Each structure stands twice: as structure tokens, then as C-alpha cells.
Length: 379
Image (cartoon, rainbow, N blue to C red; front, side, top):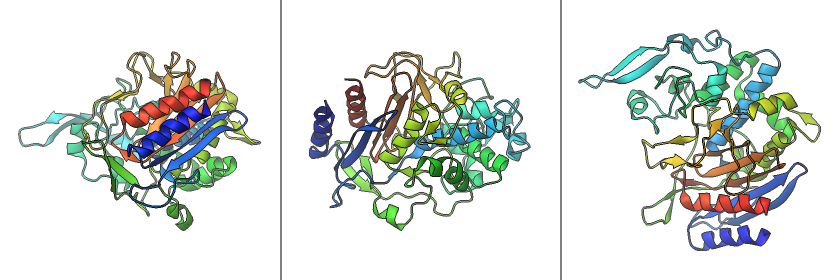
């Protein structure tokens, strides 16, 4: 069965559907399959390798969530406590309710500030401009690395709905405030260093930059076009919602830590009780993980499990039923904007990572490959 996924990826690369990609399957003991095929960038000559560095975007969110949960375990943060003492902006949050005839937003005070649990589960009311026209019209800056990028109006009062957005960026700012460390330093000391994730960083060094995969956009005819891409190199704050670069092998170590109830190779990151609690659905009757795009160049309309009442845990999307490609009920997963994907099946002790660099998100060709990778894990 190893040949099946490798052959599918080889065919996709040969057909020009992807410049290249990397993939790793793991169990609790280590990698069970790994491959890198194609080129780092379309039209280039550098081969894709397992140590190729990708912008993993929202796969950062799980790392930030783990950091926040570490501080909950230590008593420095609370899932339900008032965060305004750590995040002063939360004392003046507004909800956008449309625009007047002159185009000015109609804003009202939020009924209360969101809790850390709501930030981690995307029930805080924060959204993204690429998912909300209202937020896009209110945003004055985008992706500059400034703290003000995240001072956005809410689209609903905290706890009243599910909506994907910058809430976990705010959770990252809460981690900084509670720990007294910049997020990059906190990650390195408490998560990335102990896990041996040496190629996971907000700011790739010269060696890592030389191994970076190029970004691409899918054209209307299905072809790929390379595009320039970069993240702020000296930001005011690091994006806990989407700023990390990593490799498939590095992120597979993070997956294995979750499979092993919060520990890996002697490093204890979270307690087993916290990992178990984080893996449960925390959004109740609210369905999570699907959206309609407001910016089709960045993401398609997305519903990865249209026949399932998916929920959100404290570290990612939870599929409460068995998945069509093999994962067990209660598995967690998520993704990154440039079509990077992973899943963690603690019940079966299996997981996987697949990384590519193509926009918009929700690319059908990449999703088909990821489903084939998952099916291989359970064959």
C-alpha cells in the first residue's frame, strides 16, 4: 500500500497538479512512511526533500493552543477567567452590525470579553477578513506584524456561534503576557526545543530559507503559477494563529507527542489528562470547521466533512464519527492555508502530515491526495 500513495503523488506531480509535496505517516513509536516528491517550486530545479521548509500557516494554532494549555496547567492562565488584565484591548471590544449609508461601520459594545476557552475553540466572535466582508471593511492593516492587525471587531458576541478567526492569535498574546516571554522564545523553550523540532520557527535562518518551498496559486485552467510570498520578518508580535514554518518530519513529532498523551522521547509537554480533555468537543451543539469564503483567491468554500456534525476541541477540529478515509471517531485534525494538512487519531495510535504550498485553501487535488495518505495509514 506504500506504493499506492507514492504513485498517486508521482502522477499528480507529473501532471503539473502540484510542484511537489512531502508526507509522513506516524504511529506512537515513530515514522511508518515518509516521502518527498517533485520540486520545491514549479519551474525550479531544487528537488523536494523531507527537510524542505513550508509555511504551515494555521497548523501553528495547535502549537499555540498547547502553549496556552501548559500555562493553564501551571495556573498562570484560566480557561474561563477574565483576560482583560492580560489583554487590555478586551475591555473595549465591539461587535460589527453592518454599515451606514456613508460606509461607516455600525458598532456596539460586546456583551463581554471572550474567555481563553472561546479563543481556542473559535467561539470568541473574532473572524478573518478573508471570511467576513464586514471584518475586511473594518480592517485598516493586514499581515503587517503589528498588534493592531488583530484589534478587529467581533462578528458575534462570545459564545454565541462558531467562526474561524484570529482568536488564537490573541491566545498567543495571552501566552506572552502570562509567561513574560515573546511567543517565539516560549515555543522554543517549552515545546519546540524539548520535542526536537529544530526546523520549526517563526523566522527561518539562512539555511532553512535555502530549503523553503515556493508558493503557488492555482490558475482557472488548473495549472500552477509561482507567486512571491513572505511573512513579516521583524513583527511587533508573532502570529500564534499562522506564523510558523516547519517540515513534515518536524510536525510529525508534534503529532506523535499528542498520540503519546503529551510526551515524546522523555519530554513531557502536557499531562495525559489535559491531552484527553483537549481532544473532546468543546463547542457543544455548534457545528465547527466549515465556512463560506469572502476572498476566493485565498480559500474556497470549505466543509471537509459535510455529512458529519464536526466540533472543535482545545487544539483542533474533532470528528466525532469515524472518518471516510479511516480515522477513528474522536480524532483531531486541522490544516494550513497553503494546503497543508494533518490528523491525530489517538484511539488508533496513528497520524499523518502532508505539506504543499498552493493557494487557494481547500484544493480538491490536494485533498484527494491527503485522503489517499490517510487511507494508506489504515490499510
